[in-house]
Length: 107
Length: 119
Image (cartoon, rainbow over all chains, first blue to last red; front, side):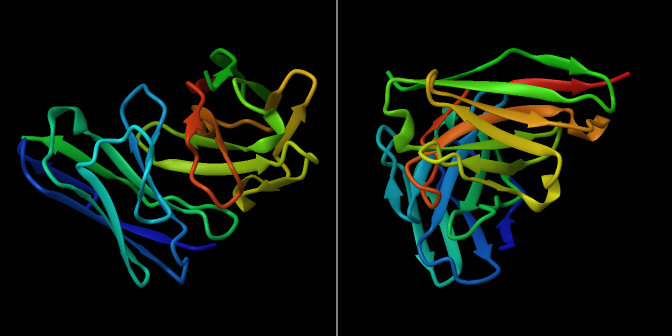
């Protein structure tokens, strides 16, 4: 199975801050990398697919990028509603594995 | 609109089985894979398996091989996930989610079903 290593596991940031979350794949997954936002008691929400494509309806402050097997989710200006846990997921091969998650706390 | 509606919460005893349903609507049922993902208390997301509704072909995570069965009913556009030999470690919220292919992200998710395993 492909391992996805996500960092940091948690972070605390202020409204308006730029936030970066990284995910490293244990082998090449080309661009088959998705990012999800998950809030307590709700279903996960797809934010980014194909490493950098913004899902319809997702605010443009969210963006994704790739460098080799390293992937980054950036929130350009953190908003109060962005308090959540974020997960990366590779969909290059079965099983489609998730990273361990990054919990974002608003200061 | 596109919806995945899951069955209600379940409480099961250790050793029992549970069957969770995921009724789809608002799109062509055979055009999208359905995945099952769970989240145990305090844990992250864990993929369990998926089904191709066209032909019923399934894939399962190694961790659940032999214990999980995903099936579909094309007449009602519903997918089922059955998990057997339950232990307390199977206490979790179970989600169904769709993706256009097995390699795409999941854009629509069910509301989740809480399964509690307790004696």
